[in-house]
Each structure stands twice: as C-alpha cells, then as structure tokens.
Image (cartoon, rainbow, N blue to C red; front, side):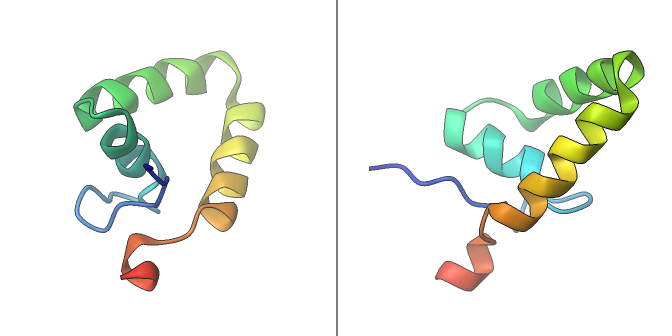
Amino acid sequence: MKKLYRSSTQRMVAGVLGGLAEYFNVDVTIFRLIFIVLLFLSFFTLLLIYLSAAFIIPDERDVY
C-alpha cells in the first residue's frame, strides 16, 4: 500500500511536488512544469492548494 509523503530528497520548497512524483513514479520535472503552467493560469487558487497540501501531507522524514 503506497502512502503519500512530502519528499525529503526531491525538495525545492516544501517537497509536495517531489512527493507526488514519487507516489506516481513520474519524473519530478513533469510535475514542476505542470505546476508552473497552472500557476500562470490561476495563481491564487493553485498557491492555496499547494500551501494546504504542504500542511496536510506528512513529511517523509517524520515518518521513518
């Protein structure tokens, strides 16, 4: 059973995108590019979602 954690190795800000990339087994660059494109389309909404995910998703270093 896979669990979603904020990444401690693929971290730039809070590790949310790195954690998503590790969960879906995809290169983190793809998630970062999609994030940047969506950020230009709806800045406030995406920023709010990212910040809430950073607080809700547990950090990988805290679990292990």
